[in-house]
Amino acid sequence: MAGETKNFGLRNWPPAPAIRPFELTARQQKLVDMARAGLAEPFRGISHPGAIAQGLVPTAGPGASLAPVVNAARAFVACLDADQWRSACLAIDDEAWRQWSNFHPWLMPRSGICLADLSQAQREAALALMRETMSETGYGTARDVMRLNEHALEITGKPEEYGEWYYWISIFGTPSPDEPWGWQIDGHHLNINCFMLGDQLVTTPVLMGSEPVLARFGKYSGLRVFAAEEEQGHALMRALSGEARQQATIGTELPWEVFAGAYHDNRHIEPVGIRYEDLPQEGRERLEALLATYIGHIRPGHSELRWAEARRHLGDTLFAWIGPFDDSSPFYYRILSPVILVEFDHQPGIVFDNDKPSRDHIHTLVRTPNGRDYGKDLLRQHYLQWHRDVLDQRLKV
Image (cartoon, rainbow, N blue to C red; front, side):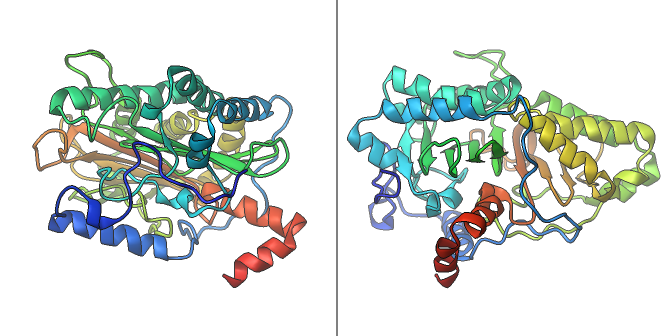
């Protein structure tokens, strides 16, 4: 069934600009134009000049089977009716892979089926797929982001923009133990892309964020996200000497968004900042701990593989900081190597009305440079080995 023409689910916003319920502001039009320009570019991936060994994603060993993920995906697909299936199930190379975004839902269309339109049992099946793909910590963070999106609804009173179940899930290809397939969840502050082939797993791009990061009242009062990511990044900078901090700092004005967010699949990230080998011992340990926090969102077995790959490239890893360094100011940091890109950013208000970045609005991003996001390189090599005719046809397009 995968590969038929998709439709848009009950809560999916149609893509035709003529039926948007409002006129775009200049800033919104700029975002839409940027998105269309980014999607029009053939995928190349985040570029990094460092050396990387060519080949497949590291092979999974014993204890890293993806059978539980396959079974969870099959169970989710099996509980959909025919119309829901047509919305949720897409071809393995559907362009919807690259159409995720953190934008306002009316600006660009969502693919897949909205969790708000599913029954409780169907929703639980979708969450089970997320839970099997991620670690306990990773899944917990993703669910907390969704819960804080419900808190954003409590603050704004805008059910057309915010809510715990206002997320779209897609299945790409047919869940299989030996053929390529994947899934995506897409919505405000939660964008996860997972590609699988056999027991190999690619879990990028992943954007997770929240505004606010702490629920001060309401249904989820006391819930907080990204404390470790914020505190560990700050602690790494604190472990540096004044000279080393200066070397790590690449700017003073925070970017309006992470550099490699939605529609920036081909972004070139300059290898600037302070190198791992130039960090003091405590700095090296803190950088490794910070990387482990992000990589630890992946399911057990595969997170160890990803960490081993990151460790092999620590010599080519850089840490960069933007903004002041003190106990209260917002900041940006990133970790860049040939095999992983991590970004953390404090943002201006959207739920709130502050026009300057604050520590109450955070975006985090993880990508795999050198053409490996969405499992693109893994799929290409699969085609090259087993389906050369398909690859030849794709190269002609």
